[in-house]
Every structure is written in structure tokens, then in C-alpha cells.
Image 1 (cartoon, rainbow, N blue to C red):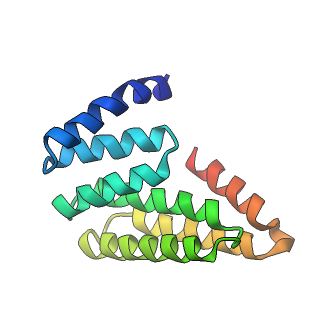
Image 2 (spheres, one colour):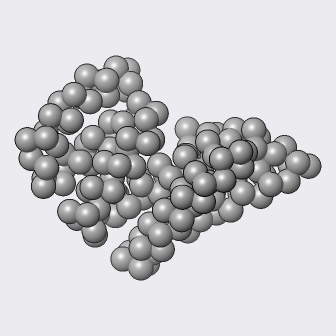
Length: 142
């Protein structure tokens, strides 16, 4: 049901961002919609634009961290090291900024723990390697 609603909302939010490119709510809605549709590449682009317009938006900051964490899981097999490094740097940057802007928010430390766990599992074959890291992340996310 959520994906059907998101699929219908996607073109509306895309049009809203075209008509009102400086309206942060449109970018947040587009990012949330794309994330629901599992289009994390598109979602992080929308959240990046949101945060350019509204840097103190805690929900946008948490969502972009989740988006980059998802993209890290996709690159965690280390077969595409440039993607991994790019996503990791973006995740780290947004996490640090989130902690700086909202130090009492408990979600940012939890994202750090999730990130560290994904890396530990992915880099240790005894723990299951990249496939188990992705499964563990998805279980935590869903």
C-alpha cells in the first residue's frame, strides 16, 4: 500500500520541485517518496537539495544518513571502491553535521552503530561478509 501511494506521489513531488525549487517541503516529500520506492540514489539527491535550503532540518539529515547507509550496503562488497568511499564520506559528513546541530538526538549515534556493524560484518568473512551485512542492515531498517 505504501509503495502504491508513493508511486502515485512521485510525479506530483517531482512537479512540485520543478515549480517551487526553493520550497524545502517539496524536496523532503520527494526524498521520502523515492526512499519508499527504494530509489536511494534519487532520495539522497532530493535530501541534499533540502539540506541546502534548510540545513537545520533534523529529519532530512537523518533520512540522508539512512539513504547513504543503504547505498553503502550496496557498495559494501568493495567491488566498486570509489562508490564506497564517496558514500562513506557523505554519510560521515552528514552524521557529523547532524550531531553538531542536534547533539541530544539519539538517532545519530544509532546510525553510527548501524554503520560500524555493517562494516564489521562486511569485512569479516567469519561474520558472513558483505551479503550478511546487507541482510543485517535491511533487518534493522525494516
